[in-house]
Image 1 (tube, rainbow, N blue to C red):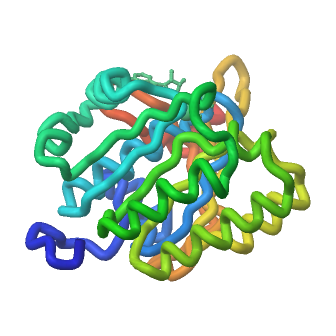
Image 2: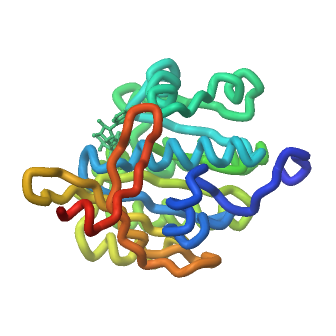
Length: 236
Ligand SMILES: Nc1ncnc2c1ncn2[C@@H]1O[C@H](COP(=O)(O)OP(=O)(O)OP(=O)(O)O)[C@@H](O)[C@H]1O
Ligand SMILES: [Mg+2]
């Protein structure tokens, strides 16, 4: 919230300087960010670091998760050395597990009211991990309208991270969404020799302080999170 004394930052940081630099210096607040990639490519870990970095910078956050319960998300983040318990107790962070079998599936009737209530309450950062289920049950028009409506909420002060599996969109829709979003982060897994490495492509960060268009190779390490590996080393 703007009145929050602890707030020191106008960007969403990962809490990792090297990673932030490669992502154009961090994602500006009030951005709509699309994080997309194949399964296991690091979408959730990357976003969990952003949530952590934001909380540490005095922002407050709401995480909607179709993948975890509150307890399993806390444990998952603790395994990366991201202890969020204090933030939960202080209500700086709220976790809202969504059981897609029980709740409304539609983007407009199910998800948008939740995001709108975040904007109404002055939440700084809202994360949806993931929107895949909703997108696969929606028409192209509904998906585009959802992203347009997200942009309106960003103009009201909310930063939104939408996480999705790339297979949820056809190529044409992905191009249109990429142009609508303020930031577009694409993740994939590549095989290099006998190793599998994760690749983050910073396709776009509107309003970035530093150069974007970077390709970052990384691994996820216990108690550390995303560890950037030089591309040459990754290939070796
Ligand atoms: N604490 C940890 N220690 C080591 N590796 C971890 C840890 N937490 C997650 N990982 C690994 O990081 C990788 C990326 O996981 P992540 O959950 O971010 O993928 P994802 O893209 O969100 O996958 P999905 O599409 O299944 O949701 C996985 O290989 C996972 O095993
Ligand atoms: Mg995930």
